[in-house]
Amino acid sequence: MLCLAYFGGAGLVSLGVIEGLHRGAVAGSIAVGAGLLAWSLTGARPPRSDLRMPGLTLLIVALATESIAQLVPRGGATVIAVAAWAIGGLGMGLSYPRLCAAPLADLAPEQVATVATGVEFAELAGTAMGALAGGGVYSLADGLGVSAPAAIATGFALLAGLAVLTVVLARRARHSLSSAVPVGP
Image 1 (cartoon, helix red, strand yellow):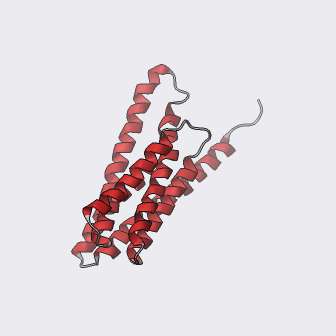
Image 2 (cartoon, helix red, strand yellow):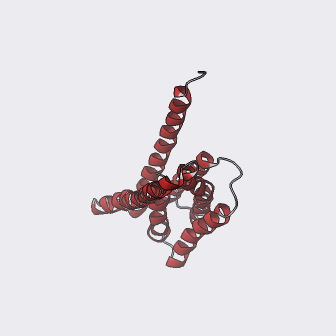
Image 3 (cartoon, helix red, strand yellow):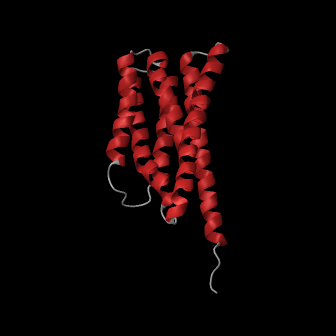
């Protein structure tokens, strides 16, 4: 779901800046690059704690802000869109390395290849589904005559909603696991 939210949003960021905010390809590229740069700088540092949920929360904030920037395009909307996507990249830098490594942490060597393959498949499936969700909403809305900013805002809002759902489900699963652990012999 993390890949779905980020890469779905990444597919909409440049579209949002170019079509929604009526800026050029350079501005759209800067927005995408801001997210990638923030992800790279944040993800390069060694993990100090479990920052998966705060990272996902930053991504949710970024997606929601991108949606709002489309609906309230004032003079600074492009700067807001670029800054929001940098925040999304920061969230990915905090979450992605930890989420990818967590399933492999306590495995026996003979299990690593199987689990790593599953993790990779989940990443790729999430990325494809994110592109479908964000781009599909935009394409459908555009085909129905909805304005580009409204269509793009809807795509960002859908991705933010899916990311919120991920947080809720992860917290429920964590709570269920902690309450299912037997105490004592």
